[in-house]
Image (cartoon, rainbow, N blue to C red; front, side, top):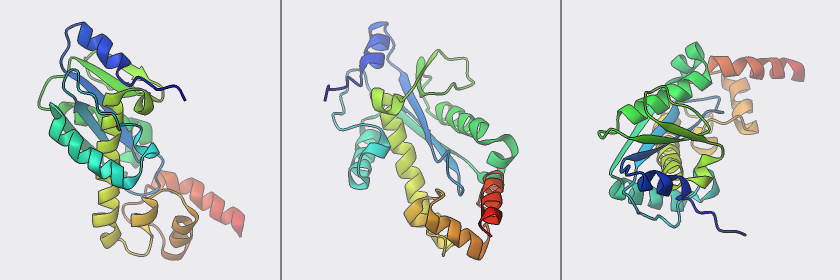
Length: 208
């Protein structure tokens, strides 16, 4: 396998004299339950994090270790969440973009350029949308790790206790068989995305 250089985009921007390049990504877009979570990360110029990759491609144990390393090494980092009621009112794409925007605004340093995973952030900052950015850019990969670890911890440590019986800690709110069966048995919680449930309800009716 050819080794991917995850600093191609960053190196180009650093060469132009930019020192505050922010990677931006979100997680939880396809879930039936819970917030969509976004992160923005500015890493120091020249820093190489060998193990950083798309958060979905690495084990939970490694993600947790990298999470600690990223927040220690980062020049600035920020995480933002948009709740299900807002997702239902403005749609998931707009909610994801809003979470990304809030994450960027929360950085504490003004980024000179954004590297975004296949999206645009509605801010007057130069930006590059990169398809599969979480596996092609170290900065986006770092953001994907912060967002995923944050959301997974909310699922396991907060939401599981609030809404037992749905298996949130295990499936993280995605539409698994266990989750769909729990929904049929228990009905939706206030943290289920109603706009996502319509498809589920139609599917349930088709089953009977």
